[in-house]
Structure formats: C-alpha cells, structure tokens
Image (cartoon, rainbow, N blue to C red; front, side, top):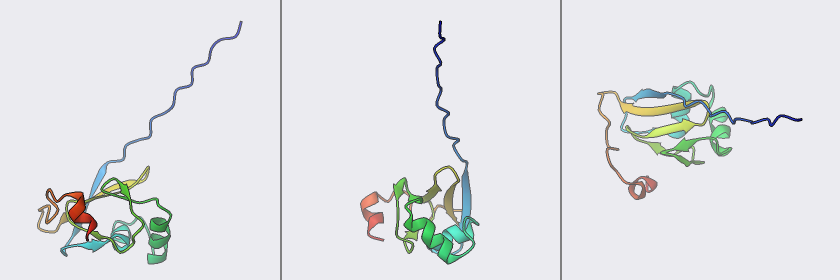
Length: 105
C-alpha cells in the first residue's frame, strides 16, 4: 500500500523593512537602489528596474527616474524592503497622499 505524500509549499520569508535616510525632498529610484547598496552601478540599477523586479508602493515600476518621496516603500521581492525616511526623521510629503497624486510625479 502506498502512502500519500503531502507536499507543503514553503512560505517565502518576509524581509524586514529597512529604513533609508535621504537629505533631499525626493530621490530617483535608480539612485535609491545604489544608495541602499542593492546595486553597485547605475547600469545595474537600470537593468534591475527594467526587468520588472522592483515594486514601488506594491506596484511594479519600470521607470528608473521615478521620484521616491519620504514615507514610500520600495521592494525587491525576496531580497529587500526599503522605507525612505527624511533626514530630519519625519515621513516627509508622502503622509497619506493617494496613488493618483503619486502617479503624476
């Protein structure tokens, strides 16, 4: 008699939210990836972004020049989750701004 084998799908590990401090009102997405140490060069950041591997506020973003404001979250699924914070410790301009307003940036 054969035994039934039950396969359990492992849940992906949830990476911790890492704060990244900026001293300007905003930062471009490719520059943020370099600042956080996820990419060594601008070309590497560009390739990563254009591959669709980067999420901004939970949505795939392929615009390397996208303005990232304090309070926004950037994620590389399975690798890193970044939370941008202003150098003064505040969350900056993105404290409740809706998605329609952010898409105009």
